[in-house]
Amino acid sequence: MTDFKNSVFQGRSVLAEKDFTAAELSYLIDFGLHLKALKKAGVPHHYLEGKNIALLFEKTSTRTRSAFTTAAIDLGAHPEFLGANDIQLGKKESVEDTAKVLGSMFDGIEFRGFSQRAVEGLAQYSGVPVWNGLTDEWHPTQMLADFMTVKENFGHIKGLTLTFMGDGRNNMANSLLVTGAILGVNIHIVAPKELHPTQEVQDIANGFAADSGAKLLITDDLDEGLKGSNVVYTDVWVSMGESNWEERVKLLTPYQVNMAAMKKTGTPDDQLIFMHCLPAFHDTTTEYGKEIEEKYGITEMEVTDEVFRSKYARQFEEAENRMHSIKAMMAATLGNLFIPRV
Ligand code: CP
Ligand code: NVA
Image (tube, rainbow, N blue to C red; front, side, top):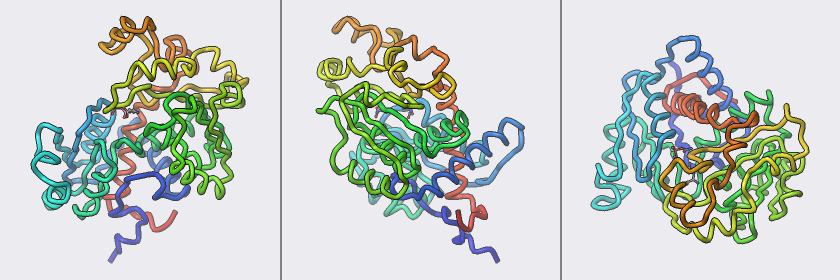
């Protein structure tokens, strides 16, 4: 009889990138590319037939919620959305008790929220795979889609250089720094000194970089940080749960991704792309965008509309890849697939 525990992924949670090897992350990225091809060819892949998936969202989401929902359905599973105002978690019931209840009914749990400890607690007490759909610290499912997009564009991942411009202390900067370090991608974090990654995150990344050969650079210097880059990446200046717009607009305006920043890379056009996890403030068509224009007189924040709509832009391919890569992750950790080693 097949020993399903032979799979390196079966039953595992995905809480943070640092828990996975380069080979494991690369497997999930390649499996995502394979599932994308199956989807485009109309080939069914019901690896999770009959499974129930809980989708817990303390924070709002467009992509992550949609990706988990459609991925679960394509895999033959049933997704159930449990929003912050729908369940007792945190207000009336502890993480431990909630985890025990959900684990007795659901086969897998996605959690998006504030605290990394909460997602770890769900994994500890539920007895089923738990997938981190973003916390204040890490955004691992975004990494699978991002490096899948990088692979689609360049044909390989190792040895490329990715520059993240903006809030170097947020979940995206943390995840890119550590994941790049694991995969052998040179990561440059270009941010004002006040927003450089914490020493703890830098230490984790440096540990992996020593093995992979990735060169990591944390700087406030635009010229140094952008030079030789293949991927220019940015994220919102104020993350969910924060509200310090004035401070961030002041600190981060010089770190906006505009055409001048793209040019500073010095990279030929066919070796250069722009990425953004989204949502993005590239114009004033949103409530926040309008408010920021009224208060601070700027119509674009972390990226200009010109770059967002340019030939370099890959953010919508990246968004679509959330679905394929989340599907790969759920199938690998819950689908009893034959993956004895990677
Ligand atoms: N990139 C991302 O996580 O998007 P959502 O916040 O819309 O899920
Ligand atoms: N740093 C952003 C990422 C959104 C996908 C946030 O946490 O709001």
